[in-house]
Amino acid sequence: MHRKLLQITTIFIAACAVATGAIGQKDAKPVQAWPTRTVRIVVGFPAGSSPDLTARTLAEPLAKALGQLVIVENKVGAGGNIAADYVAHATDDHTLGLMINGNLTIAKLLNPKLPYDPLKDLTPVSLIGVSPLVLTAPVGSPGASAKDFLAAARQAGDTWSYGSPGVGTVGHIGMELLKSKTQIKPVHVPYPGYPQVANAMLGGQLQLSMLPPALAMAHIKAGKLRAIGVTSSGRSTLVPELPSLAEAGVQGFNLEIWNAIAAPNSLPQPVVARLSALFSTIARAPDMRQKLFQQGWQVVGSSAEGLAKRIQLDTALLGGVIALRGIQPD
Image (cartoon, rainbow, N blue to C red; front, side):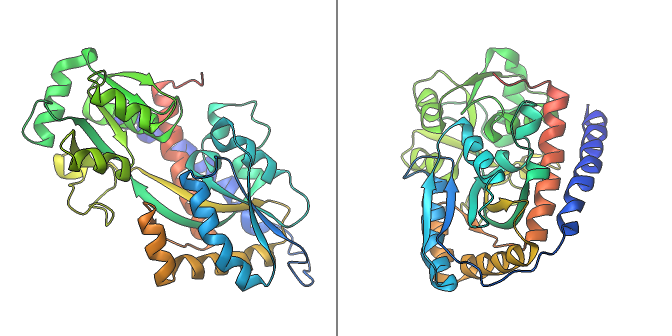
């Protein structure tokens, strides 16, 4: 099973390398004074959502740095793919997008009819922040340790269920990756969002799920849910008190959710380079780092090349799981 996943992942890495290699090959168009009008950051989720809060947090310092108005525009739907498609086809050179993992990696793999291709139609600008998920279970779940809990899950087979915020989400694919690495077999139950997943666990309908740290810790600290481990390769600064799944013996497990700034592939490369440097500087500033940390993000503030590399790796990882587990969109 592990060898098959490795083979599939290798194929995806090769395909992604060809696509992401094109990022640095765009013609460097001459750029006059830029920006010449209002800059838009398009978000595919509603006002008050995590991506929206991040975009609005970045907009003010970006406006100061550019000397031009920066607004956030919400285009909600399809897990952020409506907004991503809008950004991919924008031609005004003043439209950016604040996007999550799926919009920039596996969107086309899950839906071949998607009107944009993340690897061809969008240009990476900067990886803003990352966060692990927390493998969470009800308080009364069996096993004194994470290792014992996973052993109990194996014994339970398909009598256990896990929840996610929908087919193809990181919470879903992450659990399928865990299943392939640990031979547990809980049945997937999709919900509209993470809050509904947490409520289902609190109500006893689910035995485990992967939740964002802020949501998970609120229930864990209240003594209503139990943390098994975080999905990053090591402990996270967001929840340093929680062990990683690797500490429970799940070797090579590294899964994070993240958000990033991307632009249409038509945006001139010098503008992309300027924006990449600005977003990196803005995100890493101490006050901004603290604000994003409070929103549940461990700041990265990468270069465009750094984001391109992360897109390549995550497309290979998540795409490999999609192929191995036969995940199909609803």
